[in-house]
Image (cartoon, rainbow, N blue to C red):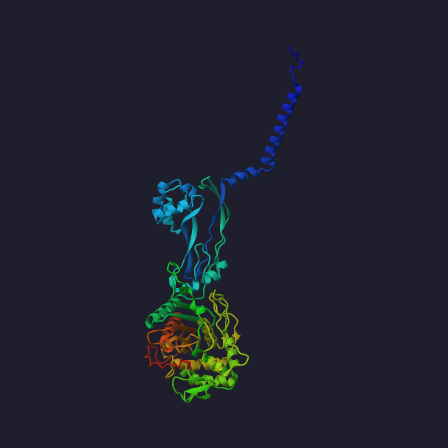
Length: 577
């Protein structure tokens, strides 16, 4: 028989130990509860939120691109993008065919793609659906299928302004043109929304907006959409009529430096790029370079006038229509005999400009062309813009001096040539070009003396209005027009092709009070007609006529404003000897 102690316990110390351990555990648990709920109250809430709260992106509206009058050229429209959780959708094979058909996808291809991504939790089903079509799919209530709101870029003018505006990718990031150049300006800042979702990713509650989306900035371009349509149309018709390979046209407001139209062909539709080829995307007016030919003669004569050695009445002996410069034979189209400087421009005499160049030296011509912006960027900031090429010699050989004087041995873009003629038209003051609408007139740089500029404008008018001028088809009824034609042999295998040309016309209107300068380049006309006065000049006339009429430029005081009958075309030399 065991004797009990007075308190009735066999081992009182064990009881105390157990009670003590329980008390310590209770204290630790209580402390942990206080720590979690009071001292670190947000911990459990955050842990729970991580398992149910999500942050979704609020898409930002990309800025609008417009012409100078506010006409839309690029807009962002709301669309629905459908996505799926394959780990959920894989268990509902009976709904696959229905879902695939509603998405416009081949059911077999859809099933193969879904099985290949069965281990993932996110795949796109189809991006940028119209809200109506997207809601029709989500209305099927297929488990694991969800939608998000996005924006898609749309270009209302299609191919008309495609080379200038460019386009974005599926995520609305600029890829070409001004969409790329001004991507940071146009692109908005996405917002953030907090939502409550279940474990399958389904939305339970829209909790709050964490940060609002900030839309992108709008961009007002310098182009006038009405003139852009005209340039696009006339260029397209010229390529069709003459079987040409490509073409460009640039129209500049000489008072502001704004580019009012810049068209290129072939073109493309930025809204449907399924059959897009790389050469169709080139903004040829800014990227393609060519030897300008006869339009440079204007500036050779300008350099002669600026040297003080020549006056408009100075007579040049171009007989017998040829001259020998080292190993080069310089030829005119025919023997023009004795010509003053106006006649040299009007008849496009190679012999006349070569004699001026050899007299004053190539350095003066080179310096003037450089001051006019040839051989350097225009400052437009367009992606891929070319600078062209300006030859530069420490000591100029006579042959290079001769070829420079009539526009061979250097290369320019159509836009550079347009800027040079705009400078001439603006009293010799060079303004920076702009593809954006100008609100304040820029400060210009005097490149050509104003009196020389006026003398040259009179000479250029003779090319269009003078008897026997090579640019008669550039006439615009009611206005005085001046310009210079060019028919340039294309390079081939280190030499010049005999049957491949570029037809060029560079001109100004109205001569009495200049407002616009334009350049038209037609690449490889192939239907037997290739002279600049025949191929490029009529395109210039239509574009310039539209600009003068639509912008309400007062007609000159001419005897008659009705359509005049054009005289037979006089061709310029165009050929390199």
